[in-house]
Image (cartoon, rainbow, N blue to C red; front, top):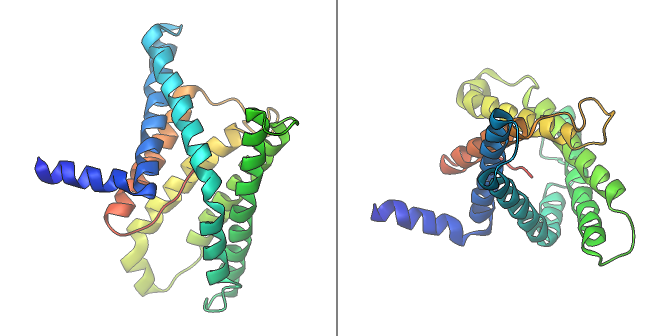
Amino acid sequence: MRTAVTGLVNVLESYRGRDRVMRILCYSCQLFGGVMTQKNGEKKNWEKSLLIVASQLSHCRTVLRLFDDLAMLAYSMKYGLGKKEEDCIVRWISVIGNIADQLYYPCEHMAWAADAGVIRMKSDKWWTASTALWGLSLFLGILRKNLPKTRGEIKSQIRSEVLSIISCTSDLVNAIHWMPPGFLWGGCSPTWLVGLLGTVSSLIGIYQTAVGGSSGGV
């Protein structure tokens, strides 16, 4: 018991660990709140409370991402043009993905600032831009993980790659849902499905972190 508590404390004391916990709580609240609302046909008090908690956690994560630009910039600069990559296709997919990730943050910051009243403009276009960049990054991530690999790489990484593809695909489905209505299934996914996909992605991210892998998500 003490070991479990110590482990949880260690996770919560790190920024990435705390973000992952908030992410899974956010999507779990959406999942259970959405399921119960659909089952009962209306939102009861505690179901509304779950969705409010999900909304507040999502807002909290958005605010915390105001400080992620420099970390992303440092990573992008370290990777550069990916000259160490042997595969040219993988290199340019990664470079374009890094650019999309880098642009995502200022777009989201502008949307947040507009919603908060810090600047006087509508936030819709900025939210759409940030979501589109996130979706592009996820799509490129899936594309990269589906590229042919050597037999040795397949044997050692197949489980991690499959999990990463499931995680990215789950997030991509949600990203398209948050695009404006009329774009594919934009705005059509029920709350419980958004919560389910986000929860699956979050659980995979936590598992990969525990075994030394990596997975990211909004």
